[in-house]
Length: 120
Image (cartoon, rainbow, N blue to C red; front, side, top):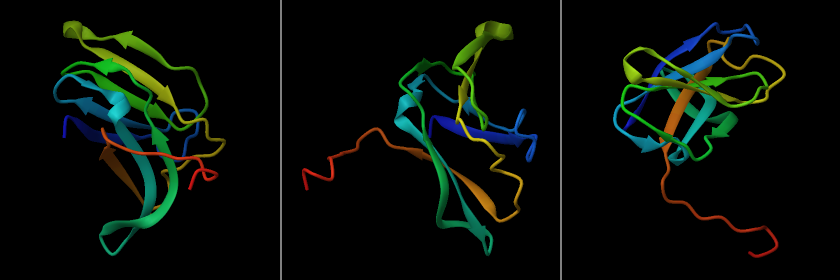
């Protein structure tokens, strides 16, 4: 994968809680979906708590992609060495990551299909 989970910071503190990922090679971060899932017996499970699909945005090697749990407006910040930090916001009203029985899943999903329920 070209986007790697680095950390979940400030678990339980809504104002600062965030998932930090690092870009391994240039990508469109819109090809990635991050999920908060259940976690039991040493593994994530299908108990999906919340899902965030990143919007389309080109990011470069060494950049950070940071997803805050709280509401906010997407932004970016210049870092040393020409790298950037790209900030996204989930819009949640309470923290997601404090319970020990939660896991994080990052999916690379460049190909997908959707239909309205009225179409199928």
